[in-house]
Image 1 (cartoon, one colour):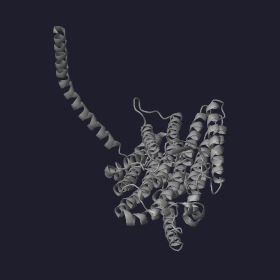
Image 2: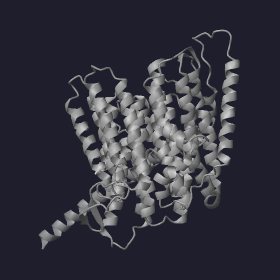
Image 3: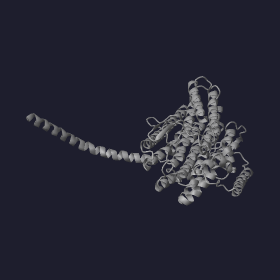
Image 4: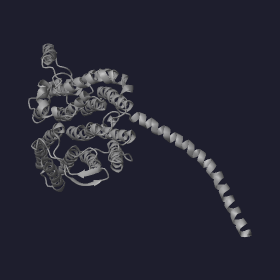
Length: 566
């Protein structure tokens, strides 16, 4: 089977990278890892269109233990997008490493292992006994790649992504254990289901746990894109979109709360993106914005929303790689990706164009595949949870504004770069499927969406209205570009001058709403409150403990004296 062969290929290459990391063939090992990811993608594609049922090895309670099987057609596109993005990211990272570098083969071993864990997670049933193993392996591999790339955690503190991963593994293990040991015809209660879903949110770095992504903001751009942007969200959000249809329907209130957390969290992520200080951080916050929209779509008990969740999850994966490539190009050619308003030495016109389309994907604007997912979600919310449309639209508008500083960074330079390999060309390759599916959405219908259990009889996309929307948007962007070219300054600007970034003020003014995406401050305040209450109880217990201790000693002595007297 293609999935099994792909898993074996990734694991063998990961072992080779670990064993040969000191031999000075790091680039060859990196290219080998990219080749393994590409071969795994081909294996998933060529699996039978009507896969046979997975063979059960044995059963534990009501859950059967099965090996990875061919991915169903309604989920195969998500797995292909995962491996396609992994292949492009590994290839770009390989081409930026000097050929004779030693010691960094371990990095590609961890990244190949993370991709293998994600493939395993998506190739088995969501409530499988192998699910906690794949989650733990993915978190450890992502952390290993982060350490090898130079990340140094704060002394005495666990990184937030490790804490989130541990919580997620424990939560999903509890749900699987409950499911295994209850009657086969019985359904688990809502509490363990919600706990497992919250654990999956924490693993994916989705709102309100998007702060777990910030550990990767200081890593190399492509390392953060492959781990926090691709692997962990694919596992966590993939579990949510796959498990919810197999579990008992959530109560109306719980579903609305989860959808509200996603919608408001998407708004908080957009505001946090507005406050980003680097391009890498901006890309991660845009991914958190999309994760919130996916959660909102998955929580709504509506067929159109379920279709939207799958469409948006695919866009999220390729967006992460494209955004990482743009940030990597900026760092490679401009020295840094700071969004402080300082002028850049080199203009990157192709990276700027790619960033425009990357932001379009993140915010659901026309011309991109995500536009259709946003459209289906808003149509579902109009009948299910109409008030959630407002924060989603606000998130899209603020997210679009948050992307402008990086666009200025790409286009506003003293000289123009003419070399766009490998980041520019590979970024275009990553975005090409999203552009093609956005312009011609009917291509995704027969091979993917029509097999979904949420699929309507026909694809809900209007062939008449779409060209007018695209023409209007293209005309607007083209007019803006022509106006920009016509109004170029005639005098050179002092390279030491710095433009004060006004978007910082906008982000700070709305920073209270950013807590909806990153609840770290609220959790810190809650933790301090619990510590304060515990200290009060501790002081009280010390006072009473001394008295009761003396009283107990006196009673014991009296009992001994009475026994001796008898």
